[in-house]
Length: 345
Image (tube, rainbow, N blue to C red):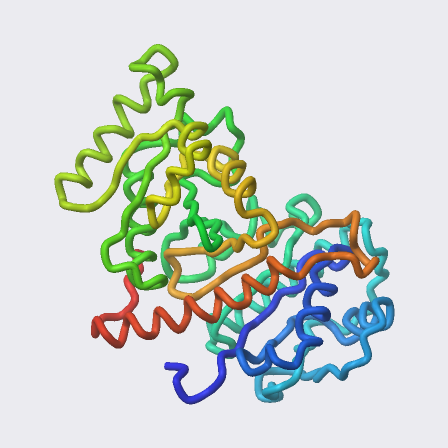
């Protein structure tokens, strides 16, 4: 339980040549945020000092070797590596990807060891982080391999929560990947997350179809009628408020998402094109279904802005706020229900 101390947020810095460290330094320059949480960054003294000088930040950092040195009211930096790293903001390199993984690995270990309470991940380059120790399409898949539970990627803002049945896979593989067990698992995770992470007592979930016009009764594909529609009917028979399938274009065009607590999308761009059209810059990526809370901003490394002091912190700050809020809501849910957080692994 976290009732007797301020929440600790562990932060991985992402690609060293991206905007991650800039977002961190900008955000925690505001001393008011330390009343919300205690930040713990996983990086190195040399890298943080480089960006602090480059971007002209003059407030002190608390460099420590482990969790015992964490201090409230300060930007704590756990030293993960000591070697000198050549930094070239805006240009991804093999080394910047390797160090992104080392930061992520250390922060994830700290989360599992309860040194921190929430994990906030800065953007990585999915290309240069690949190695013998990281062979995942992205953060979500890596964290599912390290943390108890089964994951659901949710992109969320104040107006919409978008969950993805399939994530970082080629569009050509989506239809083959879809099956009843997978779709039901993602709907179930979303349903439980709405209950315990967001305090929704009677979740309302919309399910998007796969094909244009939901297949037009089989003319443009049979998956909607033969796979998705029967699944939705089963949830309705159980008394759950699950509706669909909806054609994605009309669903976003007429703002039907405002009638639901969450939306389930069959594939990445189907859901995220609509999501980012209505929520870009304020969105948060939340990994639901795991026993620990992980959030991140909804954008990438922004190499074109790195090192220039021009990046917006709005999504990063919103991720920070939402991570703390979700953790508090989970604690409240566990207290009221008298049950441990539900996990499936």
